[in-house]
Length: 237
Image (cartoon, rainbow, N blue to C red; front, side, top):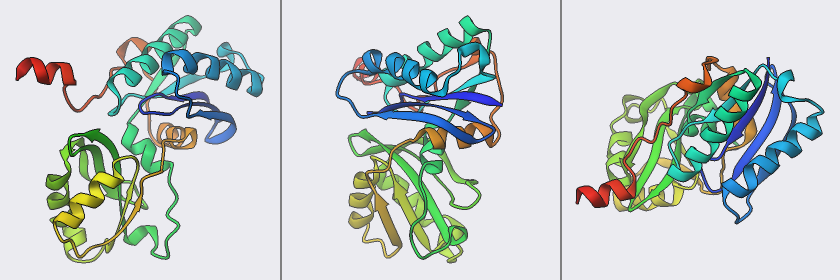
């Protein structure tokens, strides 16, 4: 299966072409311009490098959140438009799963003994995150919007952490700095590594898509914000 994989859910945006899990080509952009300006030209360059047309694809995989509300909407609108025009289907990918699958455990502790926490900074001491087994990516805490202090308390109560089966914690993504402060505030004694520079890579989106994503009609793909927008919060207040 040949997929165009896309991510616009955070500050960077990316696209890549993968076939049966193998990378053909990809591009990652950290430009300061908005995704509405950079994403479609980036997609065009990737498709040109891969030497294929949209009708050659079997489908599209796109991160649906959580993350930047505006970024998610830009990516979803663009991918839906491409899929509908090409008569193809889409695979919805979780941003936190894609982030976890983008990272390699470079520590001495094996994945089977590590808990990975992909965390995206949501501001105001909040993160979009989940906690999962590093080797299987089985979620031990579901993807959601968490107060960082509350998430630390939840992580410390995970049975696999309490009893030492997962005696190392790897926090990756833009929310790692927020989580580091929360763990320090809680005077946590856990063995924790932080990778705040980790970002969602096309490889991570592809791995998530090929790991069990289902091709769905583009019209049915929906955003997964895990929180209300700032405008909605202010309106409610």
